[in-house]
Image 1 (tube, rainbow, N blue to C red):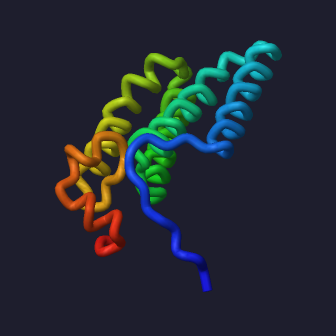
Image 2 (tube, helix red, strand yellow):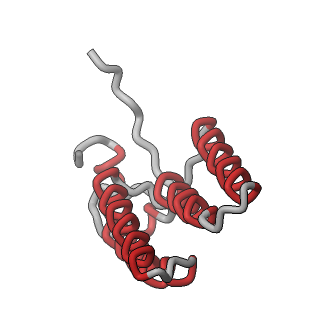
Length: 130
């Protein structure tokens, strides 16, 4: 039987997050060191990892939707021969804002300011909302 985990809300940061961000940072550094112009792609992914996992605590399904759209976005600009950070971010930031808004409107929202944004927070924390 799996032990029951206590639900929390708000900003969170763990050792695993520290390790993940460190790995992202090393990857960006290595890419830059070898002259890759794509180090910013890893940086965008790292920033969204932190934003989605630690600040807004977005559910995995929505993270995967964002990730799929990000891959399509990068592929689109690559196919056009115009892959750069501005083009990608100009298209991706509205998607990011939409994913965050979608999450904040959910009755299970438990990220930053959940105490002000989610009237059902107490029910979620107590486990009455899955």
